[in-house]
Image 1 (cartoon, rainbow, N blue to C red):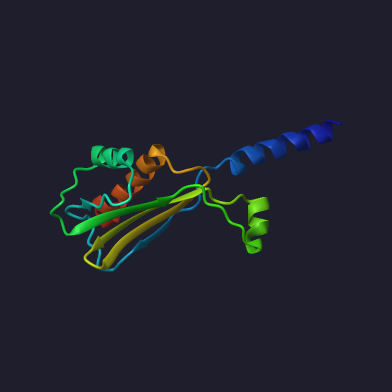
Image 2 (cartoon, helix red, strand yellow):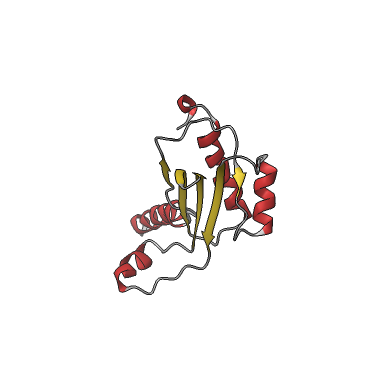
Length: 145
């Protein structure tokens, strides 16, 4: 009985620290044309909720005349009906939303930050992930992760 109890406690602890993660692993792509730190960013407002835009403006002083433009895209309530993902959905969970930040100059993609979220994207996700994006783009190269 004691052995079973110890096993149950271990399983519950492991489940708590692995299954309840609200975010996946971020995918970051940096172009060789990207010069860090960047001097400025403009914000593309197309398709972004007003609350999200206000939070981003609180966190950074965007310059709309800057040639570096930050695009934000996200999707909520993602469902997957494909049988190819059945194992992932049943064992690991399937992302409920994603969040993506892209920095472009003209048609050139300079930087991309993408993350799957296991909850619907909200203002806290915007804030937390944009902090990482700012750190990547505004600090000198030797200070970046």
